[in-house]
Amino acid sequence: MANVTVIGAQWGDEGKGKLVDWLSNRADVVVRFQGGHNAGHTLVVGEQVYKLSLLPSGVVQGKLSVIGNGVVVDPWHLLEEIAKIGAQGIVITPDLLVVADNACLILPLHKDLDQAREAAATQKIGTTGRGIGPAYEDKVGRRAIRVADLADREALEAKIDRLLAHHGPLRRGLGLPEADAAELLAALEAVAPKVLPYARPAWLLLDREVKAGRRVLFEGAQGALLDVDHGTYPFVTSSNTVAGQAAAGSGLGPKSAGYVLGIVKAYTTRVGEGPFPTELNDAVGQRLGEVGREFGTVTGRARRCGWFDAVLVRQSVALNGISGIALTKLDVLDGFETLKICTGYRLGEATIDHLPAGLKAQGQLVPIYEEMEGWSGSTQGARSWRELPASAVKYVRRIEELIGAPVALLGTSPQREDMIVVRDPFQD
Image 1 (cartoon, rainbow, N blue to C red):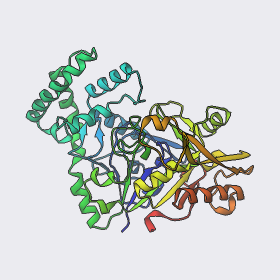
Image 2: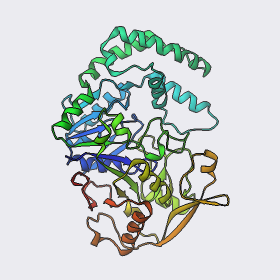
Image 3: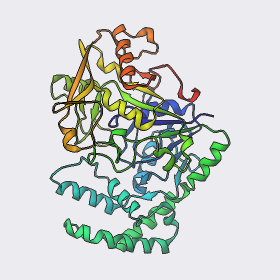
C-alpha cells in the first residue's frame, strides 16, 4: 500500500486539480486536509470543466472523498458547491462525501470581519474575503463552532454567546452592526439537517481504510510558499500548507503521508500581494499570463507571472520532504527564444540561496538568472519524451538539478491525459 500527498510547491495555482484528478483513478480515498473554499481547483475532463473550491477533487471520479478536520467549512458554500456539480451530473451523497465532525465552521460574521479588516488595512494581504482567516482565529482561540455542534442546540446557544462576546468589540471597532445571536442560531439550525448527513469521525474512517490496505490521496490547497509559518509572511494563507499538515489535518499519523508529490509550474505565478523576486512587469510577463490563462479560479484576479524560481522550489522540496515533482504547463513556454531560471539572490552585497524570513529582506531580493535556449517546436499534448524538442528536455533536466528532486510527471496541456509519466507516485 502506498499513499500520496499532493502539495503545491510555489504560491498555489500550480495545477493541483488536474493532477489530483488523474491520481484519483489510482486512489481509493481522497482527503482535503487544510484551507477552506479559498482554494480553487479546475478539472478538465473531456468537454466538461469542473471548478471546485471546497470539495475534494476525488468526487469527480466517484472516489470516497473526505473533508478533514484541518479544513474550515462554510456549510452554505458546501451545499452550493454540491448543487453546482450536481447540475453537471456528479451526484454527491453521504456514501461519497464525508465531512469531519470536528471540523470548524466558517460563519457569516467571519466573512464580515475578513472583508472589513482588508478594507481598513493600509497594507493589503490579498485575502479572498471568504472568512477563512477569522475562522482559524476562532479555532485556535477555542471558541469555534464545529460541525458536530450542529446536532446540539444547547451547545450551539452556549457557543454562539461565547463567540459573540469576542466578535462584538471587533465589529464595533470596525463600524459593523452588532451580530444577532438568534439570527445566527436560526441560520445554523436551518442548514444543520442538510450538512449533518455528511458528518462522521473522519479520523476513524481513515484509520479503518488504511488498515484495510486502501490507497489514500491527500490533497493540499494553496501552495507551500503561502504556509502560515514557512511562506512569505504576512502575505500567506491562515493554515499550514506543507506536507506535514496532511497528518494533523486528517487525523492520521505522520507515517501516512507516503510519497510527497510537489506540483510546480514551468514558470512562476502568484495571486495577490506579497514579495515575488522573479516577477516580470513587461511583455514577457504579459505573454506568460495570456498563454497560460493565468486568472484565479476563486477570485478571477489576474495572476502575476515571472521566470522559474529554483531557489523557492528547492526550499519547498526541503520543507515538504518532496519525493518528486509534477512539472506543469511546459507548453506555455513554447516559442520563447530564451528562457531564464533564478538560481540565487543578491541581497545587498551578499549572495544567498534561500528565501529569508524578514519581509523587508524578501522585498529587496534581486534574482540571479541562468539563461537557457528556448524552443520553437510545440510541446502541447506531448505524452512521451521523444515528442519534446531537445531544448525542452534540457530545460526540464536543469530544473531537476537545481531543485534537487526528480520529475515524476510532466504536464503538457490542461487535459487530464496530456502528461509524460516518468514515475507513478502510487507505484513508488
